[in-house]
Length: 289
Ligand SMILES: Nc1nc2c(ncn2[C@@H]2O[C@H](COP(=O)(O)OP(=O)(O)OP(=O)(O)O)[C@@H](O)[C@H]2O)c(=O)[nH]1
Ligand SMILES: [Mg+2]
Image (cartoon, rainbow, N blue to C red; front, side, top):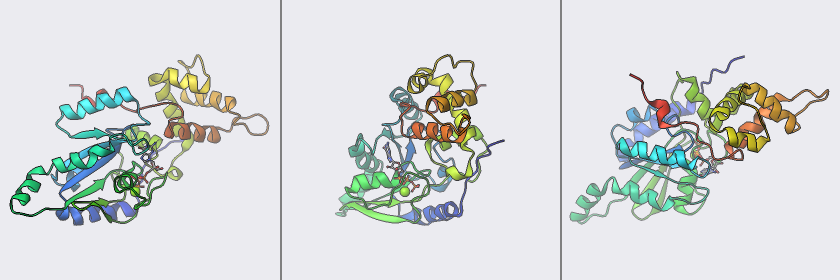
């Protein structure tokens, strides 16, 4: 059994073209990412696609992430000259900063136009990988459900302009992934958070590797959630068996229903029932020379 995760449906090719077509209208790009995967959750192709437009990074779902790790990431992005703000569409945290921080990146242009007696409408394009909360953020900013949202990747399918105030318009776009994942470790992290369609993956294998990660990085949180002990030397699949047993995921004859147990663990990771977890640190990406 192996899990080679690749997901690049046709609508992503179309979206790339759509973004490129709209680019000339855009003043600022807001790239939304999931605070639990601040690096893996950035599509490396965006640099190419948005061609030097001013860009604000928004780390959404910070309510689900590990607060200490979020601080580390913000410092890392800031040290690398990247504008970033943490937000949560669920709690409302940071939402007031989004438009002002985005507008600040084109303040010169706004001022120049003002001197000529013109009040420009700042046009902001929201981009990001699937399921990070692009449409949810737009709805929060506009104050009503204007864009369709859903707890699975691939909900938004076409472009949609939404005016949020007299001088700001937002463009919602469908989430896009890189055409190919060379690094399966990164792909798995995206899969844990729900950015990749579940149907194309083996959820059991995904749960095994997630449990390996949690055993090494969030040992106490994992043990508390599932009332486990002595897991240090166990493999992910053995931990999943223990969880399956404790949670009554058994089929007739007493055998463990590993698929059910795997879905349970992945769901509880996604909803942060296991705890506030971030799946990577800046140091994971340091190149050893
Ligand atoms: N806990 C939590 N959930 C959130 C947050 N923001 C969005 N969500 C949820 O994440 C899911 C995806 O949100 P969408 O707004 O549809 O995401 P999207 O980026 O537009 O997704 P696509 O259109 O599929 O690319 C929904 O179930 C939202 O309710 C947040 O800050 N915290
Ligand atoms: Mg959407």
